[in-house]
Amino acid sequence: MSEPRPSDRHDSSESDDTFAEIVDEETQRDPDLAVIEAGSRTLRTRSGPPQGEEVPARPADPEVDKALRAVEQELAGRWGETKLEPSVTRIAALMDVLGEPQRAYPSIHITGTNGKTSTARMIEALLGAFDLRTGRYTSPHVQSITERISLDGSPIDPERFIEAYQDIKPYVEMVDTQQPYRLSFFEVLTGMAYAAFADAPVDVAVVEVGMGGSWDATNVIDASVAVVTPISLDHTDRLGATPAEIAGEKAGIIKQGATVILAQQPVDAAQVMLKKAVEVDATVAREGMEFGVVSREIAVGGQLLTLRGLGGEYEEIFLPLYGAHQAHNAAVALSAVEAFFGIGAEQPGSLDADTVRQAFASVISPGRLEVVRSSPTVVLDAAHNPAGARATADGLSEAFGFSRLIGVVGTSSDKDVKGLLEAFEPIFAEVVVTQNSSGRAMDVDELAALAVEVFGEDRVQVEPRLDDALEAAITLAEEEDEYAGAGVLVTGSVITVGEARLLLGRR
Image (cartoon, rainbow, N blue to C red):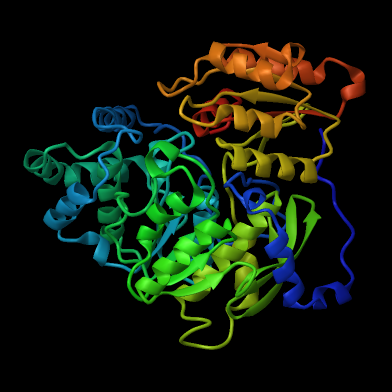
């Protein structure tokens, strides 16, 4: 197995570098390389707040499993997440008949192209460490639909998920009869989450948009903190063909008088966000200006950070996730929680540093540079667009000393697949292309044709079944003694990663 490489500690004098130097570094950094939620769950060297299952298994009780499958089947009969009628009319109607549950608690709303789920998990961990009861709503799920709705850092149990659905089902059916289109899969799940959070009750909800912002179903909350992770090109058929156009849709989550935590962005996207903030009298904190990553160094099982927040510097933060993008996600998450507590605006000072350290040390992010097997090392990562793939490639190269890396790639058909393959080409010795079980999956022969264009015929192997693809990649990684440090990366889609997780015995 190839282990993450430790590095020497920086001299103490290096930690005294001025923040102006960090600003310059942030300004020069290519924003497209700072992206993605291609984070990771790794070995943790410090303990933190108790965490639940990283990915829940199917219910052990056959009756509960049967009931959960029935709910899943009913939800699957609605419009899927890729079929949209861009408005919040239906979800607003559902919230109305439910008694506006989303207004029973304050919230932090997260948009962006990449990094949303990992950032949401970090925010959740920080809030929980400060003794707040949290609800987290994220998408898509890796293996279980119940992952999407979490309370206190753990996915709600299947019984509670079923109950949440049954509680709102009569109201969903009522709204269905009054609207031109029935509520979609995502809209019903959003209603379930908001109702479950009110029922708990939570102290604060951490909500990730499904797509875009303005017309996303989650956008019936009035979040006091709006977080915008790095924006790049994705869902261009629905959100726009340029970062600026996409930013225009995502800026819709910025509400009157809110605080905006703005990650490093392409210039045109940042301009759109700043204009929106001015229009609604929102306060903006920008990565590389008001907050950022002061220093980072590779450590066993993750990285050691010094972060600059809205209230000052926080040193010696161990983050058990790989990649520079995750360090930047951490800076965004820290500043979002500071803003939620009013630090940097209403009150001076900073958060308790030990509590911040404890929270970050507890963070997990399944399916993001996640090691699931050794000898050879198999890593899972849900990168699904070129920006995400570049961040994943950088993080993998930095943290692992693989002498030879085999890729297993299964993608969705509606993505920039050639761009994703090109991002991985420098680090893959060979690639095994495959297909997941989703109806959105790219046909394996089409994917193979693109892979041959990028890698050449000699470096491409085709295995239509994912289990065969995993076996083939592991065999390639093991085939020669000189490649004792070889590894396998499974990537291209959250669905591919989730199915690979199950096949490799992770629950």
